Image (tube, rainbow, N blue to C red; front, side, top):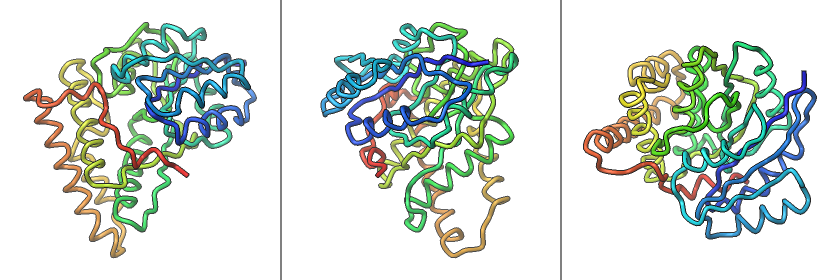
Length: 294
């Protein structure tokens, strides 16, 4: 059975990677999956993102560009895509990713099963793990991977059956709000560990805190406002996994406690943001160091 998909890319000032990402989609090795359309939602971009996508549209008739004059949050852009998407199966991905050649086939294929409604990829950072910030990125994404093998957690690139019309527009974490909409209708969410994409983690402490603070505040909102808890929310669960996977190397023993403290501090700020409404995370704070993958 061949599955036709609509692909949605949410972008804001992604001139460094959007062309590479679109090339990566064109180079996908597909057998049971057919790409009907690729829709780029460019929200408030002030760099060359729109021009690059328009040039790609000339070469690829399946590619469409929708321009939002200002940023209204990723969830708002996702809802525009869901309204425009022509297929019953859709793929959402961030614009700051590099794709492996067969990730789309591996990600979408499980959706041929009637019981599966959503799939998530396996993100692997390109950062240099011999540097502290690179180590931090690899550690957190490895923990994400370990947890997802037991309790699937979606992120970066997802595929799902379009069985709802929209997600909450004030959401700061779109994947976490899509999960309960799928599971709540009796479908399974599946983590496809060999569907690998490459991303880049923050290279500065300030950006690390901003990103982790944003995510935690969004996950708390999902928990208390939509009664759904993502598998990576628990501090205890994360710490237990760190201890189970401990490595007796100098870098691991010295840097891991520092990463834990940074993560806990970021989560504390996210908690304050959510409880006391200190910061609105609907529109993400930009993290420029995550945008240059090559």
